[in-house]
Image (cartoon, rainbow, N blue to C red):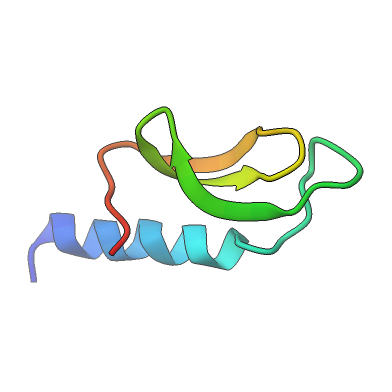
Length: 60
């Protein structure tokens, strides 16, 4: 397995673990998986702040 494939899986796993977590930047938000400025990210559905984003990643 290539290093980049292992890295992508790890980053994707981290994003998925953050999904449905509470936002640390606002009182009412929950994190969802979506695109943020063209990157895969865990983003607050209330305030829009990304908790984590993966540059060049692609969730499948």
